[in-house]
Image (cartoon, rainbow, N blue to C red; front, top):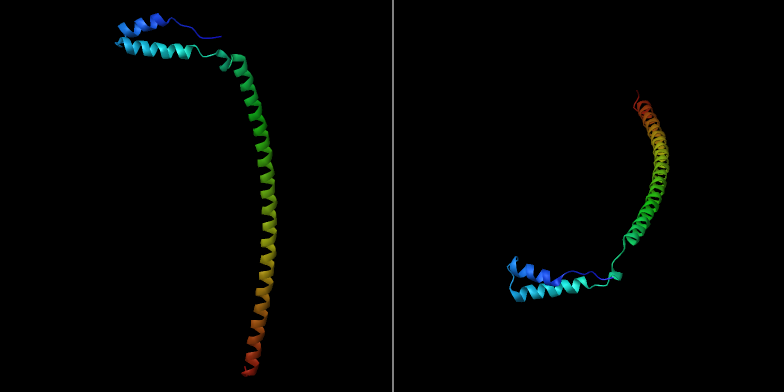
Length: 120
């Protein structure tokens, strides 16, 4: 199927109302004729556009589902990582507390020993 239109009417309209010269009107009419003669097989029908739209919408739904699952998995991984980090910080805090306590015991022992040596 090709698109058709009245080229003589276009030519007359361009010449008289559009202030085109005869050569300009003829050239523009020829270009319009070439465009109108395009084979409609290259154009998508409403049905094809509808099928494409349905396909795209389906693909978008699949992508949304995939992304939702991905985000959920990432959030789970982040919670797990946060729990591990909290546990390691607690372990570190306990180790530092034990070391600091040991240092305080040693320091107190040194103070007591110095007092005894110096005759206190």
